[in-house]
Length: 160
Image (cartoon, rainbow, N blue to C red; front, side):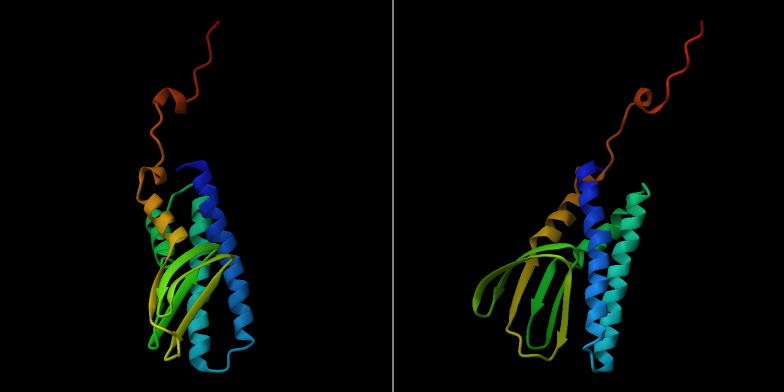
């Protein structure tokens, strides 16, 4: 995996996960219904999953399947009076077609939104950052380049 891409993923998974946990813990202070606590615990779990995946990546293994899942969950933005969903960890740049027209939004940090039966307008959107990462995780950039055996093994000491 490309070193800079790995570093970006580490920042977005571990850093974004810790920011997301902090934001979600603050939500607990204002929640007043059991369903709100259940939803918040679910998003705490998602951010903890991101931290776990980031730690696995930092240890040298490349958990591609887990990374793809974590960032795929960040791609959609769904807005409707029935259900609203948005999840981002670390960085987002979203374009959306909402009832009022074309919208865009960007955010450095983590955020989530899950609402059932609200007054939200109809619309859909895509987090371009997460979509680009999922695309790159499916490309050759995510695969470690093959090195020749001569480059990976230490040379034998010279006999004198």
